[in-house]
Image (cartoon, rainbow, N blue to C red; front, side):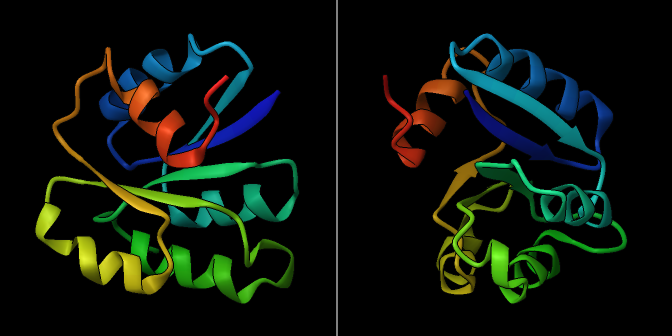
Length: 122
């Protein structure tokens, strides 16, 4: 079982992503409403990858990724950004993102897209 932490400040987006990704066999989907919550959850262990929104109040996606990279036990944790600003892709990859997915997303395809990026294809 792979644990995916989905992080977004929009509860509606979190719900759609949770439902869309939760049907994938072998995936446990957890959610966090912001960067601070995501960082706390990752530090407790057991998270295999993070799907992270870029623009959030407080600890935004960029700063969350930096904090994850600074934590010794989380330095290699795969992080995939999801954003409505695809022009940020090169910047986000330079920060250490594995990939950048676009909003709006297709709820019927997002799990397949993420599985390919994470190499979680069964």
